Length: 337
Image (tube, rainbow, N blue to C red):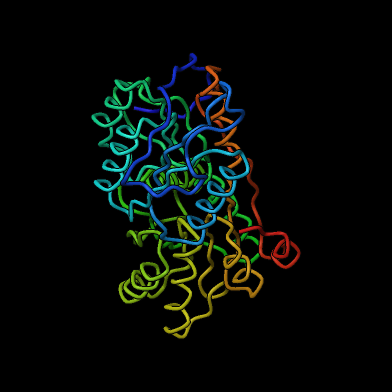
């Protein structure tokens, strides 16, 4: 099992030259070689499998990877798994068949990767995880993770909720509804874990999660599940949403029920997409814990280092901030996603 710790890993070798292929979309160039014709170094071919396009965060993440690959001059073979693990495994096998230099992917779920990653290892193609972690019996199957500390994001959400409750003047018991991310995904598991850690350590007697269910990180899911929450638990005080898109969907159901989001039901969410900041500036979300999707430049640096036979940290964390409602208007113009 992967425990997200910082440590150095040994240098990982890479496979031979790039191949043209059928399955994955080529977004980073025309393939072939770069540099001079007289023995110049070959253009790096990166196979990247994205989990899907379920949210504004994910779209920004995809754009960041594509633009950074183009800027670096890499040949990017891109595949959208459409939230299906079997699609992602097929894409990785396609990348192996194409003999790409490096494979990167944001895994749909935490488990179920050992077989295909063993195939990549046998082909001597290094694998880089982006955004999300995996659980594996053999940690040599991937080089590094480039992404956020989701458990810490859950902790940060709980700590910022303390500030939100204090500012709102809320006293006494707190009934919390939790909108979870995709079942089995690293952010869903770890954000819930981090939030619960703080809740049990510091608020065991006054905070209670009265209802929790997945909204699959989508607005439609957030809207549908929140409507059901309000039917079963009309006296909810707080909504903790694992991402902004679900929170925005939930806002629609809260308003449809005749309640005021951000006042009658306090809302804390995670991500920091522009639409989330718009809702926060309108007083409908009380606080947002940032999860930075702009991983492209960091990923390309890692790919180059790995291709050159260098060593990298086992976990390369992204830099992130937290925002209260009164910071939203000033921060909104600077949001890049």
